[in-house]
Image (cartoon, rainbow, N blue to C red; front, side):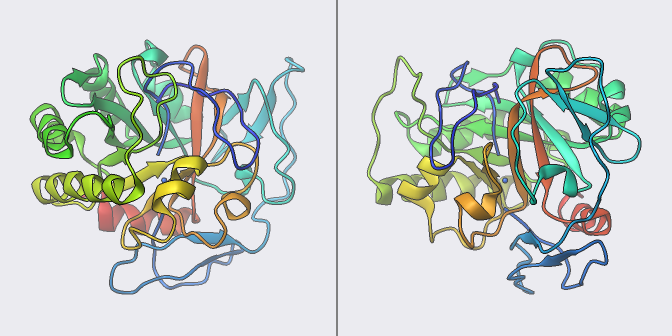
Length: 305
């Protein structure tokens, strides 16, 4: 997804590009993590609930950097990446989670996926389609590059509220190869404040009904229940209390998701739109997985086949 400017808790700011930057919600086994994380509300039948931090998993301080305006984050392994507009998340900061990933669209341009992998990135979401007539020109190149570098990957669809969900699902299916859907596909739902062609905002019941059509069609075709990406305003107005059997990828760039989406389980957390990533020029969205490394391996085994 394109990078967003930072927003304060409870708000979502205008994207720099109409469609590119998102996804989130989660799973794992009912096992306590010695790293200080536990499964929160795990449903043994669906394993679609998220993890919540109950303690720090690392006491490491951010690595120093020659650029005083960039905060270097402790990344998995020996990797390093940073943020051009860092936020103080307090005690529950993103780098307490050991598994991180990115989400990208054509606006990221050329990507050196091997450098991204060496930086410690474990997964990547990439824009594939939008509405019922648009494809991302870099999608094919990106998923093949991520795959070759050993980065788990999945496509996302940017939803367009002026086109029937059935048409959008058919468009996604027609343009997304099964091989590119390693992790479950993602439905990106948010109000597009910058759209010049679609300013309508359907009522919540209509939004949910249309979403369900897309989710069902895409899920049946690929054999994987899609993940839902959403920012706080859209979630509050349309999704809170619904789609409980789905994993969520939540956007929260000024505070921990638990502070912005109280008691809502999540699998992925998009914590910045201004990340600095080796192998990519310009800002990049960076995300955290809700569990530890063992839970990540278990999640991949269950959902990324």
